[in-house]
Amino acid sequence: MSSDCNRRRLETIPAAAVGGEKEVDRISGLPDEIIHRILSLVDPQKEAAKASVLSHRWSKLWRSYPILEFHNTQFASTESAERFAAAASEKFSPSIAVEAVRIKFNHQKEWDVNFCSAFLDNMLDLAAKRSPLPQEIDIEAEFDRKTHSHVNFDGSGTYSIPRGLLLPRSNSNPNHRFRLKILKLVNCNFDRFKDIEINSNHFSGLGSSLRQLFLTQVSFPAGCQILNSIIAGASLLQELFLCVVPGIWRLQFRNLGNLKVLDIHECPVEYLEITGVHSLETLCITEAPLGGDFVVSPMPNLKSLNIHDACQLTQEKFDELISKSPSLESLSVGGLAKVQELKIFNADKLWRLGLSCWAQLRAIEMKAPKLCDFRYSGRIDFFIKFLGEVGSYRKEARQSLEARYWSFGTDEKEFHALRKFLAQLTQFWFRLTLDFYFRESYEHRWEEFQEKSPIPRVEHIQIEWDFSILINKDAFFDDLFQNFHPNYLSFTREEYSYSTSTEDYLVAVEYVCKKFMERNSNNHCGTTCKCWHHQFKDMKIIKRVRDGRIKVEDGDKVMDISPDTCSSFAEAKQILLLLIWD
Image (cartoon, rainbow, N blue to C red; front, side, top):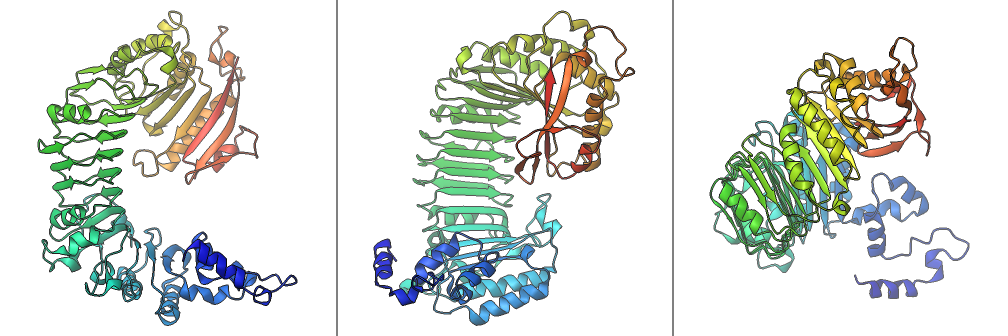
């Protein structure tokens, strides 16, 4: 209903209907459309009790609420979920069309797989029987930890999507037409669609109204044919995300004039065609073979390109891809085994560059006068060679430099060259971040170079590694702080890191904290020279990042470090320390 109609209905509501001046309940007299809009802005399950108290009418309004939403983490047991499904089937008004279906099973709460599948069938059947069909479908069927893992995914253990939820039952009835705009599926399959002819208009019709398509761990009975049929008919599609979709070795994106975001991750794509996609702004391809059959037309509006671990992508096709993207602002590349030269010319708009160095890369040629954000991962020797190219840019453009070292500690010459180079480099860059990833023990010292070059101005040092493999911890940290005086020191642990356990992570943080706390100990530094122990003044905790949120300790103030502080870091994904030097 339009806003004008709602306004006129509000003007005609009598005072008694809204309770008059003495009554608190002014909601009961509002039209259903307005209250449904209010409900769509909040979580109806969490706010149901509050809504019922504020207005008696809200206690029963959920029966006509056009969004069917369920999350298994909000239910204590399967019995409570069954009661919810029974109540919904019995009381959900059959005359109300379901606009959106959002059902999620989280793998952290493992229920019986058969129960979950049957529950999904019942809930989705409730939506499929109404006309018209939903405009949004969001299903996450991660029934257990096995289905949550991407490793060796073959389509087994997935939930089979009911045909009636996606396909109209009658083409003659206008209420049964295709109207799906958003489709998000996790750990599902299309096995119930296998008897439908690929060339029929069912699949192309399914995509005819789509704006957003997100598929994660989704399998198709006919491989890539069904998916290509859906995409071919999706002329209105704006965003497409494919992650771990087996069997799709061939993908075609033709004449999708509205497509702006294309993201392909961990899919066995060997043939990829992107033509007539003039509105594309973001293209991300990671862990896909991409052989010589890579067809691409000019993409004048492409601003962000991320291509990693495309092991079969040739030098010729990579150069063609870069040349047909004249408006690039952000570029991230890495793991391109058949690409030996990285050539970037006429990149007048490029301001961010991410480079994960690979063994076959031999040379870099580039012209990007606006480059101001550079992130590097790889060997230090090549890092220095590459930064020689970047160093010619004007000072005003240099704002952020982040370097990640995956092979740190393998060659002493690299340390010497790096320190000397950083002393020159940091005169021009405003912010420098060093990110250490250890794969070996640390055994090198920089003592002979401490007098030959000034201390580089490094703002932030970030450390992530398996602390147990670092043999000489004291030697590493003494050398680190003797050569760098960072303003910030952070410890980061990836959520799905296999190399860094919680115990190792806490040991690392506790070790560093105690090392700083013992800086004034007589036994800690027996030298009379002005080493880092004498220059260091204090350290405080600024923030912890937990579950994607930043928590500032002690309100807006930083928190003094103490032995007790380290015990509360078990759930923190990142710890940021403020270092104060003379």
